[in-house]
Image (cartoon, rainbow, N blue to C red; front, side):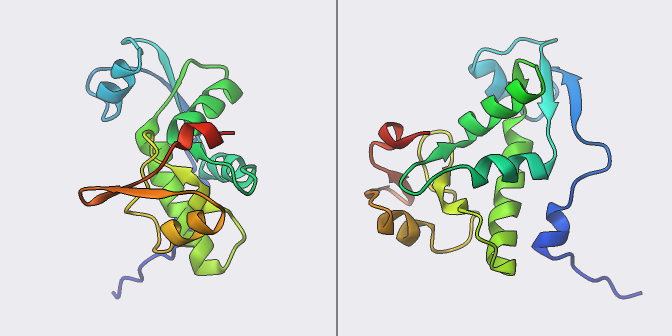
Length: 155
């Protein structure tokens, strides 16, 4: 049997078992980061649907930015829990960005950054150029690229 690789759009389809609300355990892949942000074992954590992530990404206007932290905050608020898994959310952001490029969708994926204002190297090429077109200054730190003063442009 020949395996057919899924397209980015197929990967973006909503998941059958999502959203999930779990109690944070130290063995979770995202637990170390969440605990650094202030979460405690037993806190409620949501794993949201990809479509929920896309909906938030679509609301970022031209010239503004959002980070995974703000996306997670909005998802947690929507599900009436304290935390959202940044790992799952980050994966869905990358899938959404690649699906948008693949399908020529108008999703403004380039406006979504990593938690510290860093451009996501797993997103499609062109994020730097698209951000610069919108007036953002990109700075290099070693191999990594960041939006200068990104906090001033967060929605």
